[in-house]
Image (cartoon, rainbow, N blue to C red; front, side, top):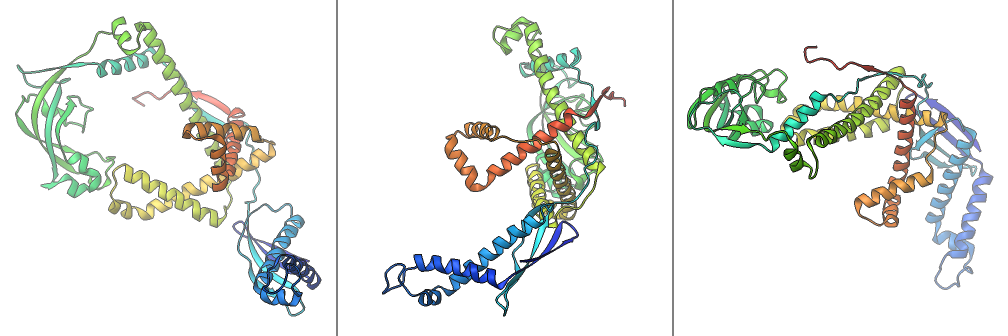
Length: 443
């Protein structure tokens, strides 16, 4: 067998194979023998039909089977001869030809794993904020709990003051046009509202909006104008002046419950105030620990990607870019973007999706190489444990769920993702982590 392999750019290799005539004839004879044994020809008992009759009746099927076997065997032989080449996928064979001398030739393009040198991945320098749950944070969470259980009393004998809660109806316009007409579908929730509760506070709603409510009484009206911030989420109306026609329908004052054991018992039966504080602290520490782990993971992966660059397979990049773009469109639509706004941003969206896609693929190739270098393994028992947990969450029998995953080809993805997780854990474990003081509000 004559095998020629030429490496090309962007994770591609060109493969040309010539199978000798004697190998072709031998393979054809084996397949024809199997057809003679199994074929059903009218007028003949099974296995007794003349070979020439069977060969004529099943000529196309025999030829297809011969080509399929020759191509499959040739690929296996080519990969044995080039063990250092990591082939990810094989494109459909081209130029498939039965030569006049009886030999068989074809070409194929191989998608190969990127070639790169692993950087020093042990001891990556990452910085995380110092983990600390202060008494101030615990008290803030207690105040939030108190607000959830607050009572609200109507104010009837005075005008609105700072700290009060105002109940308002409003409609918003820009240059006399309804807000949603200027800002699109995404602006519709802000365009008008009835019975909207708002605390008279500088940080509520838009900067300066609630100052315009001070001094108003129920049933009084006022037009309040605000300039939308330059970082406003709806790009179409950033920096514009919006006019709000406001009617105050009610004023309320908040009565917070006393912060004592009786209040704690309402939140968690049988618990004292100190017990409640301890529960809040434990919950905050657990959430903070999860956040720090995410920061560490993101940190080591970002640092790893900075240290090395390489091409990824174009076919993989195209597919992953489309997946990333679909996900970004879905996120945008869920956030209130209209189809028109998505179309307007299509160019930039695909550019961002391609950057994300390349980083994602690079990360996967790097993690795979690290796992191989460090001999990290995922045992069958680990996969079974993960699938059992997934089946339990899906409320399905484990065996049936396992078959579903095998049929859909997802079982291999689960094993691969578990291997990636092991490689990430390895990176975090061997990283050089330093704690930084949290930035103050002033900074």
